Image (tube, rainbow, N blue to C red):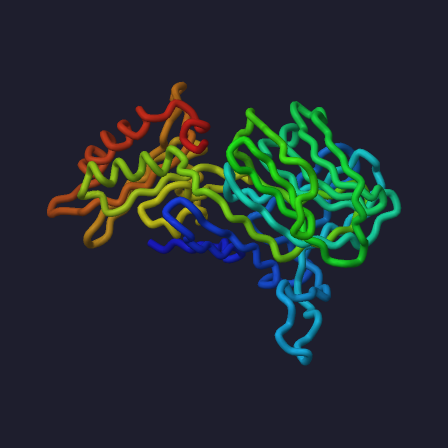
Length: 350
């Protein structure tokens, strides 16, 4: 049984028992491609964004230690290239693999061109196309702004006059800590600290507007680890049933493909499932497999209405006389106990 983790874009570094850092190393990917793990979203009108890797000259983050060191290096950066000038057009590229609660997100950006707008931004606490927050800068408008989108309507806008030079790399960061939102531009606090008592964990996205051609690079997020209920359920089952050799829980991502959301092995979280897991979630189909020392059972986890919301793969120690029938007899009580802890997909993953 072979599982392959295709999300090599992200380097995960453990910082503490509750903290981590993800570095989005766009330079590892070829030009003219969209990085994996991201999804293009269009809010408003007009054409979707065209998010691709392009080559550009990028100065180092740290000052060179020698006069002979190159002042810039050419490497792949993320770019939004579509120049549709529709006014109420907001292309975003959403990182789909994880949601974040407390975090510090930092990225460098460059305003390249745009007749109607020259903008760059970070969308965060993203729930869907109608509910998210934005910190954005405008080169032509010479300002930085924060606002919320709630049920599709912009609200709580705050704007300050700020010069944003085009054609050079700038740095934008957003920190969510408790009920506070803190924004920095080029290492300095860019606007007052905002208080948000209604915050929900959400996804992170790159944001632009109208015909803005904008580049992004050197992106990272430092965050407090969130344990979704699926992880707690998996851990509890592994502790209670010592003959379980492995346990994974899968849900469908935004593209309808199965993704591991809980596993005995941490580095398998986020890895893709296969046809078996997809069929299990879509149709409730159960599967059985056996090798020399273990048996594997794939069964659906169902919501309060009995509809499949996830698939669980149980790997159990085999024994002499092991059959498919008694393998399912061993697995069913475990799956029922897992099911009793959640009543919906949201309760499993949020």
